[in-house]
Image 1: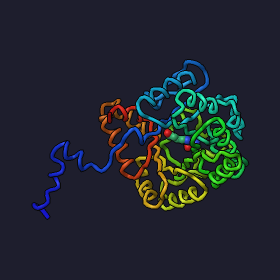
Image 2: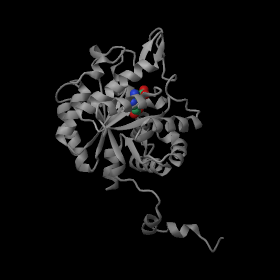
Image 3: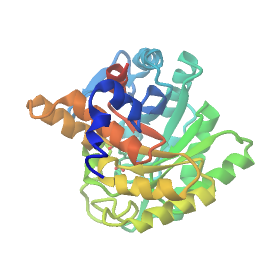
Image 4: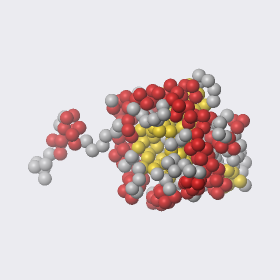
Length: 329
Ligand code: PBG
């Protein structure tokens, strides 16, 4: 009781504050998302993601070496698929010599110790910009999961350590896990985007990969029939527990900041690592406000990453990991 207890005593200076600090972020927490394009000597800035780039494979090598030197030990790969290779079923996704498969090998050949995580989803390969096969104006679940399992296997064969299915089809974790076991890929991990919301914060990412749902007749305009309703909380726990039963090694909540209540709910009930994805729109908001001089960029970045960790994240995928590592070192 006051004045026996003055809470401000433990806030008087940085030394005492650092002693009582409950949460610390470190490079060990971070996963760096990387966008890859075909071509040579390409480093293309993404318009809605200032200072974030798509790399061709030759420049990806340099990027990966730099990340490793900074202490970032995990990358999450995404590819921008040439328009002429897109179709409804994502045939190109299974090409053993496709861009993703070559990107995996490039990273592994450049920095063998780097943990390679891969996006397993149809949207970059889909003419319609959907995470599944479109049949009669609907996203067909079971046709899609069969393809996703094959796609995951193809990444595993190319050398991926952890597959990260980001689609939100039902049953895809079980199907992928069974196929990996069948084929002898016992050590390939699955990080499931288990509570992924139908969020408006993915816009800049869809610019980066040119993967937004197309505006055409009989094609769903959004992803609400598979990604979760932002209004739902309990459903996130159900989704996550099911993915764990199906064989996920790591589960994920996405986006980050608006969904920290979900992160905590899940952290409280699961006994495996929980990843959080601070998504492209979250990155863009901070960049835009900082450009206008309305926010202190570095302070906001560290505050948000710390808040994500405090909420219960075991690891964080973020476009700020480079900045963050420099700021905390
Ligand atoms: C699609 C996918 C998306 C993101 C990761 N994988 C976008 C979507 O669901 O439309 C978003 C990542 C981001 O916004 O940073 N499979």
